[in-house]
Length: 201
View 1: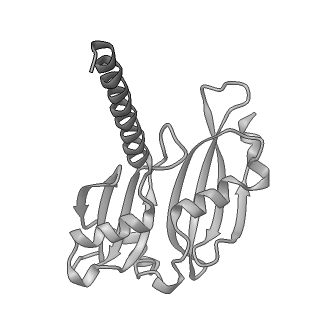
View 2: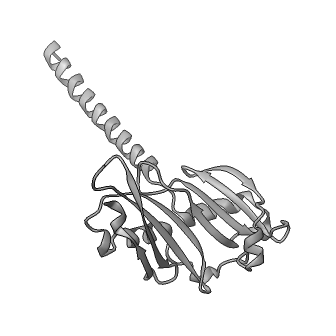
View 3: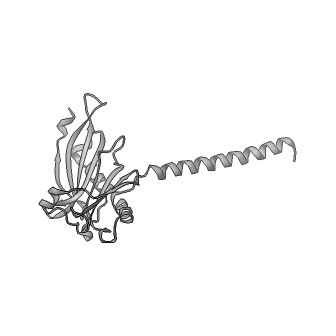
């Protein structure tokens, strides 16, 4: 094999390796970018609570998302008969457990909103609820910037309350809370639209 042939061979091999490495990096970045859904985090929460609380979802809520429409800070509240307020809360950040505590849910106890949601009615995950809310006809011409989701009981049934923020028309550096869309956690249908798009003016 001549010197030129060797350089050609190693050059081609190097390009193949670089292409493979780049592809791997892209796939890894995509995997990291995909946030876990609320139901995936609820399964993860079961690993950090007692046997009596596993799978007994009372509420799942997020904080307002930052820099993306999908939240990455979540709280999973489980019904726990051993806790004073009958609840154990697991906090997640970017899919990782951050803390486990037993919050004082006094108001929830008073209004009897501390009991678990009906498991067989939890069919619509957070990503689906967010997609449904963010594709409502009223917001199709707006640039949505953030969301905040809460899964809880509403009028006796589990629902997703999806709060949305949109870029202001006069100042793109600011956003406005444009209201809430309530989506059934069982059917995925919009039960109530409380959007106020005039807030972007």
